[in-house]
Image (cartoon, rainbow, N blue to C red; front, side, top):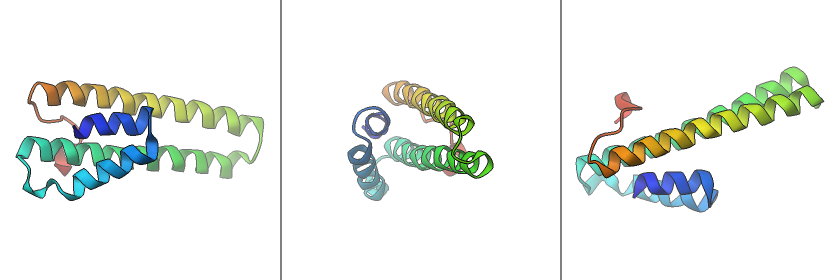
Length: 109
Protein backbone atom coordinates (compact mmCIF):
# COMPACT_ATOMS: atom_id res chain seq x y z
CA UNK A 1 0.00 0.00 0.00
CA UNK A 2 2.74 2.58 0.63
CA UNK A 3 3.94 2.43 -2.97
CA UNK A 4 0.36 2.75 -4.21
CA UNK A 5 -0.01 5.93 -2.15
CA UNK A 6 3.32 7.13 -3.53
CA UNK A 7 2.00 6.74 -7.08
CA UNK A 8 -1.31 8.34 -6.13
CA UNK A 9 0.67 11.23 -4.69
CA UNK A 10 2.45 11.68 -8.03
CA UNK A 11 -0.39 11.02 -10.44
CA UNK A 12 -3.85 11.62 -8.97
CA UNK A 13 -4.16 13.32 -5.58
CA UNK A 14 -0.86 15.00 -4.68
CA UNK A 15 -1.43 16.50 -1.23
CA UNK A 16 -3.77 13.80 0.03
CA UNK A 17 -1.43 11.07 -1.18
CA UNK A 18 1.54 12.67 0.57
CA UNK A 19 -0.45 13.12 3.79
CA UNK A 20 -1.44 9.44 3.82
CA UNK A 21 2.13 8.44 2.99
CA UNK A 22 3.39 10.58 5.88
CA UNK A 23 0.83 8.95 8.18
CA UNK A 24 1.96 5.47 7.04
CA UNK A 25 5.59 6.49 7.58
CA UNK A 26 4.88 7.74 11.11
CA UNK A 27 3.10 4.51 12.05
CA UNK A 28 5.47 2.09 10.37
CA UNK A 29 7.47 1.17 13.47
CA UNK A 30 5.25 -1.79 14.36
CA UNK A 31 4.85 -3.26 10.86
CA UNK A 32 6.86 -6.03 9.22
CA UNK A 33 10.28 -5.26 7.78
CA UNK A 34 9.28 -5.45 4.11
CA UNK A 35 6.37 -3.01 4.45
CA UNK A 36 8.50 -0.70 6.59
CA UNK A 37 11.22 -0.71 3.90
CA UNK A 38 8.72 0.16 1.16
CA UNK A 39 7.12 2.84 3.33
CA UNK A 40 10.45 4.45 4.07
CA UNK A 41 11.56 4.24 0.43
CA UNK A 42 8.32 5.81 -0.81
CA UNK A 43 8.55 8.60 1.76
CA UNK A 44 12.18 9.37 0.99
CA UNK A 45 11.58 9.33 -2.76
CA UNK A 46 8.62 11.70 -2.35
CA UNK A 47 10.74 14.18 -0.42
CA UNK A 48 13.72 13.79 -2.77
CA UNK A 49 11.48 14.33 -5.78
CA UNK A 50 9.93 17.48 -4.36
CA UNK A 51 13.33 18.89 -3.43
CA UNK A 52 14.93 18.07 -6.81
CA UNK A 53 12.09 19.47 -8.90
CA UNK A 54 11.64 22.65 -6.88
CA UNK A 55 15.36 23.35 -6.45
CA UNK A 56 16.05 22.81 -10.15
CA UNK A 57 13.28 25.20 -11.10
CA UNK A 58 14.48 27.69 -8.49
CA UNK A 59 18.09 27.62 -9.69
CA UNK A 60 16.92 28.01 -13.28
CA UNK A 61 14.81 31.01 -12.30
CA UNK A 62 17.78 32.60 -10.54
CA UNK A 63 20.04 31.94 -13.53
CA UNK A 64 17.65 32.77 -16.36
CA UNK A 65 15.07 35.10 -14.84
CA UNK A 66 11.49 35.19 -16.02
CA UNK A 67 12.27 34.49 -19.68
CA UNK A 68 11.14 32.00 -22.25
CA UNK A 69 14.32 30.01 -21.70
CA UNK A 70 13.44 29.61 -18.03
CA UNK A 71 9.93 28.38 -18.76
CA UNK A 72 11.19 25.91 -21.36
CA UNK A 73 13.85 24.58 -19.00
CA UNK A 74 11.46 24.41 -16.03
CA UNK A 75 8.87 22.51 -18.02
CA UNK A 76 11.34 19.98 -19.41
CA UNK A 77 13.07 19.62 -16.00
CA UNK A 78 9.80 18.95 -14.18
CA UNK A 79 8.48 16.53 -16.81
CA UNK A 80 11.69 14.49 -16.99
CA UNK A 81 12.12 14.22 -13.22
CA UNK A 82 8.43 13.52 -12.62
CA UNK A 83 8.50 10.75 -15.23
CA UNK A 84 11.60 9.25 -13.63
CA UNK A 85 9.98 9.19 -10.21
CA UNK A 86 6.80 7.63 -11.62
CA UNK A 87 8.90 4.90 -13.28
CA UNK A 88 10.70 4.29 -9.98
CA UNK A 89 7.28 3.94 -8.33
CA UNK A 90 6.15 1.41 -10.91
CA UNK A 91 9.29 -0.67 -10.36
CA UNK A 92 8.89 -0.38 -6.59
CA UNK A 93 5.26 -1.48 -6.88
CA UNK A 94 6.32 -4.56 -8.86
CA UNK A 95 8.94 -5.33 -6.20
CA UNK A 96 6.41 -4.89 -3.41
CA UNK A 97 3.92 -7.17 -5.14
CA UNK A 98 6.59 -9.87 -5.49
CA UNK A 99 7.66 -9.51 -1.83
CA UNK A 100 11.07 -8.04 -2.63
CA UNK A 101 12.76 -5.11 -0.95
CA UNK A 102 13.10 -1.85 -2.89
CA UNK A 103 16.48 -1.44 -4.53
CA UNK A 104 16.80 2.30 -4.03
CA UNK A 105 17.43 4.07 -1.63
CA UNK A 106 18.91 1.02 0.08
CA UNK A 107 21.23 2.92 2.42
CA UNK A 108 18.27 4.73 4.06
CA UNK A 109 16.12 1.69 4.66
